[in-house]
Image 1 (cartoon, rainbow, N blue to C red):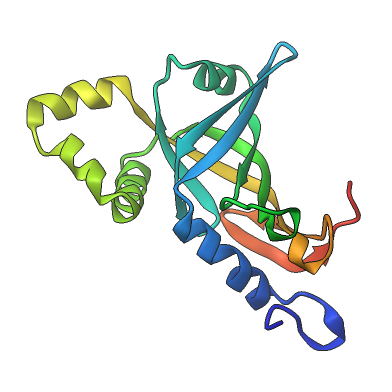
Image 2: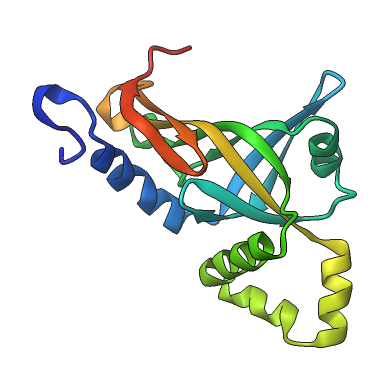
Length: 178
């Protein structure tokens, strides 16, 4: 496979070749939050900006209320699989919060609209736009760690990278199931 360099180790280029198509093709991620010992998971449309993940959600939703109290979260992104050997995807841990700066909001909105052109309809009518933005906030999930799972390489085979400021820090390492 092109993902591996000499000695069988996954390369950074291989990690990107394996993960970027998933990020571009899959429209939803399952976001897991927890507050006061009660876990919660929900699906949200997302767009990737490097390895940061942009999504809209209502600040009054359970997952956003959880994030407000505890920004630590996890997420999965994966295409549909019909057999265990086809399972592949990303397992993510990090923090999520509303995007606070105008520059961040502009970048996040541009990233989101690039992936989801249909969302432009939400912006096409000024009075509806104000209403929609009063009910939905732009959030960013900033991973600290991403694991790429690919069962075609063997059941439970995962490669892990650490993420700093939306960029991979170091080489992918085979995960031993921690």
